[in-house]
Image (tube, rainbow, N blue to C red; front, side, top):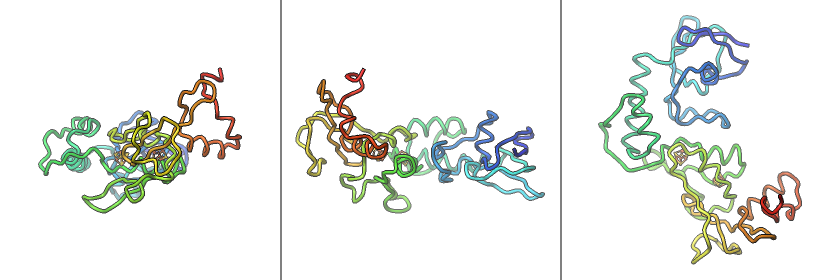
Length: 251
Ligand code: SF4
Ligand code: SF4
């Protein structure tokens, strides 16, 4: 175990734990926008900056990625940290003024009206969708394109992603809820990309990807994207026919 202080309070954490992990375990709030416990640290949003004093020297570090050490002194909020966080959220509020999560964070940090040019984006470029797809799902179906103010999360070549399994993990982690998916009845199809349609599809709207849904062999209702079930069966060593029947019909 390691021992150090956060805001003057003695805390302990496991070897290798980050400052953020230890702070959360002790109910000490540090704001973040790009951190998820299931994902590797990314240090993109910089909201989680804290001041660390070690051997008499102080510096600002991102608490999501900085491993806590014995004897360090951590301060999660002071005048400098507040000013940096306010600038970050002001920029995000100008970019995404209608994203509820951004508005809530701006309120919390005391920012109301941004001084910068207002845009109408919803994506804060936190990268959680790209990372969950790569690190947890193992699909690598989406990525960042362009740089600077033109940076976007996209499917390869802005077209149907042949690697997307339609699992919805990216929808789940997106803090601004700007990724959407729908299960729809097939009609004129612009994204199927030659796939054999079953009558129902899952549409990943942001990724221009449409995946035919497998229908339950017993009741005929849609179960999940066929591709997702194939990948799952392969990963866990099931025969494909083991996933032919929906949960309701199995019970
Ligand atoms: S739905 Fe597609 S893009 Fe989203 S996490 Fe799953 S595989 Fe990746
Ligand atoms: S789409 Fe959502 S999860 Fe992906 S980078 Fe943008 S805000 Fe983050």
